[in-house]
Length: 575
Image (cartoon, rainbow, N blue to C red):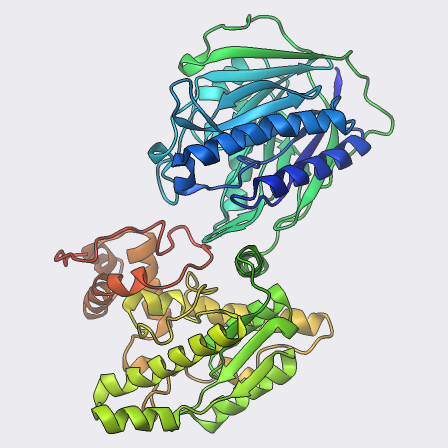
C-alpha cells in the first residue's frame, strides 16, 4: 500500500488576528516540510480564529479572510513550501454571498480547492445556523496515489454525510479539521466517536483539534489518528501546541466515482488531483507520539490555567489583580493565576473589615509567602464607617456594602495600575445567587465560575499534592482548605447559615443545571423536597445576577452563559 506522511498542526489561532494566524500556519508548515510531511492540516477556521460569532456577518471580515487565504497560498509558494499540501480552515462565503465555515487546500502557491462545512451545529455553545449556510461537496485530494477525504468538525459528529460519502469513494484517509471546545471527559467521547467513524467510513481517520482559548471556550487539542480498525496510531498532548507527524500505509486511490458524482446526503464529489507517485513506506517509518490523556483534576486545572492565560494575554494585559480573603475560592484563583501568568504578575489585595478573622488574614499572607505573589493590605473599616454614618444600613444591606467597597477598591487599583481583575465566584454560589452584584462579582474574568464548590476543594488538594510531588511548597495553606467556608460579613458567619451543605447543594445543582431535570424528578431521585424546592427557587431567581457576571472558562457540559439561556423575567416555578 502507498505511504503518506501526515502532519497535524495542533495550534492556537487568535480570533480576528488574521495576519498572526497566517504567520503561524507558515511557521508550522515549514516544520512539517522539514519533517518530510506530504500533507499538513490546520484547525477549523485557523485563518480567522474560532468562533468568530457576529464578526461573520461583517463583509469586511469575510473579505479579509478570503483575501488572506489567497495571500497565504502565494506566500507558501514563494517561501519554498508549494510542494506541501496545506489544509486550512477559513471564513468564506457561498455563491449567494452568505458566510460559510470553510476549508481549503493550498498547493503550488494556489488555492486548489474550497469547500464549506456540511453539518452546522446548533446546540450548546454553538449557533452556526445564525451565521452560516452549509456546504454540499465532498472534497477528495489525491496525493501520491492516496485519496484523502476532507471534513470539518460537526461533519463527523452527525451520522451520514461526509463520513458515509468517504466510505462510498473508498478514501484512504478522512481528515477532519476541528474547533472542538473542552468539557470534562470529552476526550474519551471524541476517541469513541473517531473509532466509530473509522469503521463506518472504512478508512483511517485523522482528527485535528485546536488548542488555546476564546473567551469562555477552551480548546484542549488531543488530536488523534486511528486506523480503520480503530487502533490509535497517534495522539497529541492536551492543551499544548504540537506538530504530530506520522507515516500511514493507506489503500491505493479508487476511480470508482467520477468528479461531480452524487454521494450520500446529496453531496457532490469534488476531486482534486495533486499528483505525485505512490511512495513506499520508509524504514524506519515515522511513528506518531501517543500521549497519555490527563487525569480528571490535571485536565480541569490545565483548562482553567489555559483559559486564564489566554484571556489575559489575548486582551493585551500582562498582570492580574484579585482580592485575597484567606478563603478557599480566592486562594484557588490566586494559584490558577500564578500558574497562568507567573507570580510576579499576580497582584493581590487583602481588604479586612471588623468581621475578618485573624486566621483569614494570616492565611492570605501565608499564601502570598508560599507563591510569591504581590500582596498589599487595605483595610475597609474607615470607608465602611463613612458609608454607615451617611446611610445607617442594617442586615443584608450592611453585609453587601462591605463586598461592594471591596469591589470598588479593586476596580480603582485596576484603573490606576492597569491590572486585569479576576472574580473569585464559583458555580455553586453563582447558581443560587450567593454573591453581591458590584461587589465580589466585579472583574473581567472569572476563572472558577464553572467549578462547583466541592470540586474547588478537590482541586486545591490536588494542586498542593502535585507541588509536594515536585518538591515544591504547596501553594494553598492547609487551614484555608480545612476551615468552614465563610463570607465573613457578620460575626461568626459560615456559608451553611444560608445554604445547604455543599455536597448536597452541588448534587442537586448538577441534576437541575447540567441534567435539566425538574423538581419532581430530583425529589424522586431521593433528595429532600424542602431542599430541592429551595435550591430551584434560588437558581431561578438569580438569573439576573448571572447575566452580569464576567466570562470564565467552560469546563462542564452546561456552563452558565452560552450553554444555559433562560429568561430573566420568568414566573415559571416548577423547575
